Length: 141
Image 1 (spheres, rainbow, N blue to C red):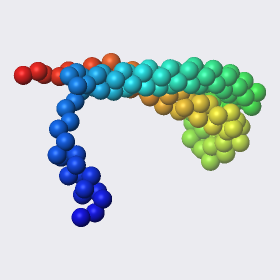
Image 2: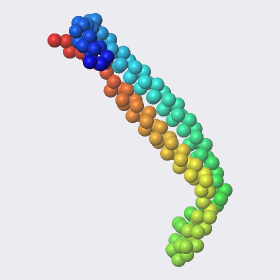
Image 3: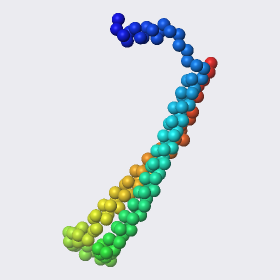
Image 4: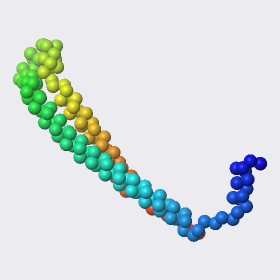
């Protein structure tokens, strides 16, 4: 018989009784910690969402200024003014459009929009989960 078997036999032979209400206190402590963790996560995700909103606003302004500066608006206006010539010279049109697009600022805008949507989704999901947390109830016989 090894040491763990002796210890197990000793525990089984001893009549240990848990104090009354200990299980309820354990469950309420777990519920409090879960609620605290959910509130903390919501706060972190909300703060990060606020930063992502500021980043998105900045990147929106940067992308709109870059689009106006590059002359992409005039290339797009050609679609509505003379669509037949755009269809006739579609390869030149797409090349001029690709050359005039400010890709770096548009990528920055798309990445900030993606980050904002992910963080808002995480904050809302965490808020839903925090609302579902209930104290553990014990049914007494």
